[in-house]
Length: 336
Ligand SMILES: Cc1cc2nc3c(=O)[nH]c(=O)nc-3n(C[C@H](O)[C@H](O)[C@H](O)COP(=O)(O)OP(=O)(O)OC[C@H]3O[C@@H](n4cnc5c(N)ncnc54)[C@H](O)[C@@H]3O)c2cc1C
Image 1 (cartoon, rainbow, N blue to C red):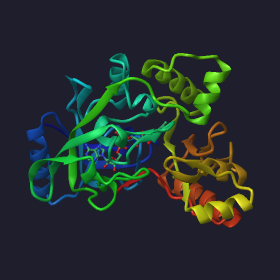
Image 2 (cartoon, rainbow, N blue to C red):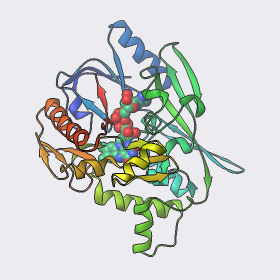
Image 3 (cartoon, rainbow, N blue to C red):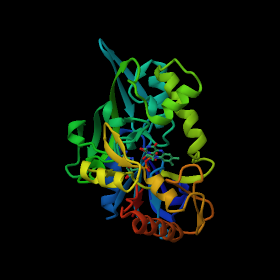
């Protein structure tokens, strides 16, 4: 286990904000996870499991506690009669997992290409994009249970997945440290219709190949045009959740002329549309730029502190509520 002291959270998170963390422990074996929690207990300090920091916001005062990062990497294939199981260590970079599955012709996660982060964080908020979510293929995860100090396997059902939700970021937040994830995948292709922007790209470029590798290429190209690379521009990706509506609410919204998408996962209004129509697209608020390509993405251009971000967030949330009557819910997690 590597023990680091006084590490700036801004250097561990893609929004690049946040003061020093007292300890950052990097665990390299399952056994070291228990050691890391034991270390925190010994010093009576709170803990926070961190991956790549692509969905986490640091605060100016830092974190007087122990950040634990999974550094276990590797993907193991187990081919079965009807497909394959991929066991992925939680410290593996997520996009390597997608690339690996696509190379093997396995379908299920190709639309999740280029989502920044580590595999261990993928089930936490049930990452999703372009019509797929990790919960569609995730079979189980191996965890360290901080409450009982034991190693366990949790099944897909145990995790109670929903839109950007699982027990890991709701009822049992902080209880489990994800060691590895197991995906169950099949050879084949995603079924049509694809997400609107993918269908448009296919039509515009007359594409006939819908293999996982081809969809990966398409999604990667679409994302590169719209979503900033966290290595070039500081952001946490989508800053707010989309708004999900009951059938009754969806009808009311449509009567008001709001665009409601009725998909497999329910009725939704794109939060980016609300932000754009509230007049924020491309605006700079306290050093935080509302992306001019995707209004749901907030970019830290020159913010000096977490407070700058908080002020920008409040301005956007307040205006969207005044104009449309919907409260936007923040997606990234606060490291505190
Ligand atoms: C440019 C950009 C684009 C993005 N696009 C998408 C997208 O299309 N779809 C999408 O769903 N998300 C997207 N995101 C958000 C982000 O990529 C995902 O949430 C990703 O899963 C975060 O992984 P991470 O390793 O960075 O997690 P972190 O930010 O490090 O952690 C996120 C949460 O998971 C917990 N966690 C991390 N590791 C563990 C572990 N081993 N055990 C237990 N808990 C853990 C943390 O405590 C925290 O609560 C985007 C982000 C960026 C910056």
